[in-house]
Amino acid sequence: IKLRRAGARDLPILFAWRQNAEVVRWLPSFKPITREQHITWWRNRRHRTDYMVLVQLDNQAWRPIGTAHATDLDGVPEVGILLGDTSAWGRGVGKRAIALLLQRPEVRRNERLIALIHPENVASPHVFIRNGFHKVGEGWRNGQWGYEWHRAGWVEETPTADHMVHRTVTAEDA
Image (tube, rainbow, N blue to C red):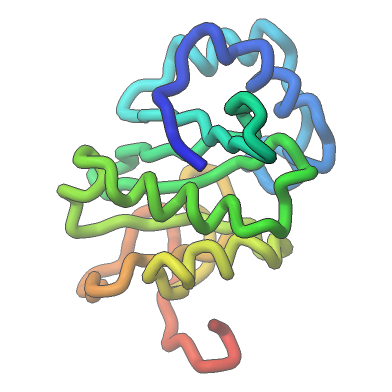
């Protein structure tokens, strides 16, 4: 797999993925969006870098199957992934895409990284655990209820914004 920076040429496929109810059920907005909302989102992506996740199967052409992103929210960068092509789910693509994203200079330079994961999303925790993240709490952040995961090596000394509740994580949580 490889990453390339997303551009306006990717808007049609990004829009198609955001229309798939199976895909968007893990996003903060649990419903498909209109084309106008999609264009507005694209134009207003401040402090966010999106990369297309591309795969090459059986020596075929590279094809996009999702996105990986880094977003600077409240001074604490968030990383995330959306695999819009559901045929890629469960194949280790997400784990490798996040590993590539974490190697990007604009992401790597950050001491703190978080990932917000929907509580019912059972696949994403494995992606982030395998990339050095650990669960630190749950609650609301940026209008989304979810679990907050931090990259290994970050010791939280103060509570985060938006009512995130930090608690001791047991082995059963991981």
